[in-house]
Image (cartoon, rainbow, N blue to C red; front, side, top):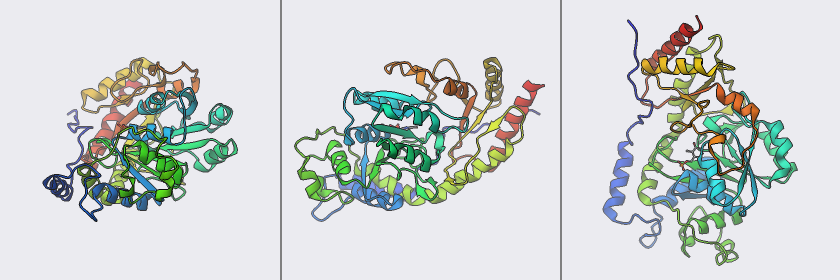
Amino acid sequence: MTEVFTGNFTQQEPIPEAAIEAAVRVMRSGRLHRYNLLPGEVGEVSRLEEEFATVTGARYCLAVASGGYALACALRAVGVRPGDRVLANAFTLAPVPGAIASVGAVPVFVEVTEDLVIDLDDLQSKIGQARVLMLSHMRGHICDMDRLMAICEAAEVQVIEDCAHTMGAAWAGVPSGRHGVIGCYSTQTYKHINSGEGGLLVSDDAEVMARAILLSGSYMLYGRHTAAPPAEMFEKIKFETPNISGRMDHLRAAILRVQLADLPTQTQRWNVLYTRLETGLSGIPGVRLVPRPQAESYVGSSFQFLLPDCPPDRVRAFLSAAAARGVELKWFGAPEPVAFTSRHDSWRYAPPQSLPQTDRVLAGLIDLRLPLTFTEADIDLIARILREEWGRLAS
Ligand SMILES: *Cc1c(COP(=O)(O)O)cnc(C)c1O
């Protein structure tokens, strides 16, 4: 009998009951806007910011409307101006070049390695072209952060970290998002904590964070933030910083606080699934798994493997054979972007760039999500199906 997988790769777990109760409390209060507080009340948004600052070890935190908003806000806060060039990974998701374009800046793409991290030699060769690097830890893969920071510090390039896939991860014990001047996170449904839409920024830099808070639409109510720099920081800049509204509300903050407390447990659960799939797919000829460095602690919420130099027709045949058995794979090598898998050559508002190494890696890159609604038995079945269908094509 041919086994078929019937799980859903985009089905998240329900919002925890305690979070639902917290959300209902906020709704009963009628005070959903972050600055709509009773005298002496701190509010869910500021509490979330305090807690996320504690979790990441950051001095300051700001909650905003989306991960993409966090990225654009970070670019403005470090002073990126229209026409400036910004270094970015060629292998990333559309919100990254989109954030750069939203401030009128121009992305300069850096190649990806076969280990799915930014190519530090290519970064070194391009470092003189910009003052800022927007670094994506794409699909949760973290590069050698010590070497990256050495390259950027030597060139006085500021690093903004896009931690959409690394909330809860770390490099050599330092939480992801804490190497650069700002770390940006997403709380969108497909990330590690789920408020539908949402984002967070962390920083130790008082002036940068004061700018970010003003930019996010704080009016002159920044004094109600509790994970913020002192009031003097705002005095200098409050008349010259535009309000570009993108605040978070208490409803979303309330459901995120409960999930943030659960993140270490969820991370362990994701990594059990990840390791199981890694074991299930190891040793298949023609399939390259991505090694995970010792220094990296990751959150295995998605899984990637490479079919190096596999002809496109064979990749397509594999994808459709897997799909026929219920295993939905994403391919970064398709000529047209599908769902979330867009590629540098589909961001045509940016100048075209030659990235032969990235093109070669993406041509064989397969991606799948590991939602926590999957069981270990589901993972074993997925691995069996992929192994059988790849084997069938090879024979
Ligand atoms: C999801 C994501 C973002 C932010 O996305 P939003 O949908 O705006 O929250 C940024 N970068 C990457 C790599 C992402 O996957």
